[in-house]
Length: 254
Image (cartoon, rainbow, N blue to C red; front, side):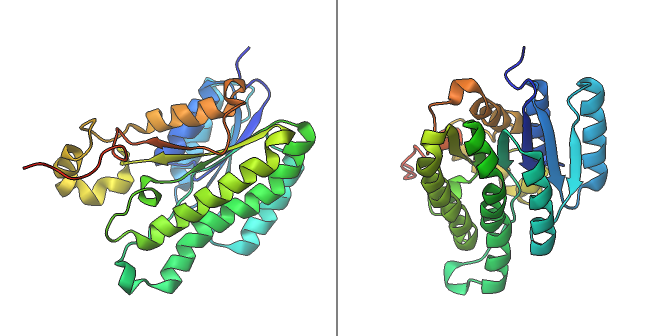
């Protein structure tokens, strides 16, 4: 019997990239997975079909949802509350680049809605059933950008910093009720999101102690572990998956 037998997990932003890897790895571990997507409808449909064929009986389901649309999010939360989930992985994210002194408030608020406020809204709708069952797992995908400063990432880092602060607080408020809440803070992941930086990849990799970007499956493996019984005493943590990037001082000898 797998760790995920008869347990359903919700993953946001699961149609492509890291989210798809998380959905695929969870399904492989025996979890029934519902996942949301915004723009990757064709990929999401193909993923659900693939996994339902590979894992009959799990009932993998894809939901179209724009987390920036508050009315749509509220409606989805009502459905999610009725379903009741063992676990929730908040993977969906939106970038927001720009120098700190030139921060665009509208763009920053849009990123905050997707990266942070949608997490709090979904958690609010799911936490009651988890605490009643005295069993629940919440994993939020943060970023090393919230742990180490990087020029041009002020707004994005702020959204992920808020996510970390919220998850730590939720963790201590729910720990006695059998719910764990953790943040995974990935470094650079080899997905299409980093395609615009292809010309700089070699230089970026030289600055990572491991010498390479992460594979999506390496982050997904940790998210799946945190859903299981073996992670029942891990809560309130921020776990970097960055090839040693945040452990390094960052001052290079010539």
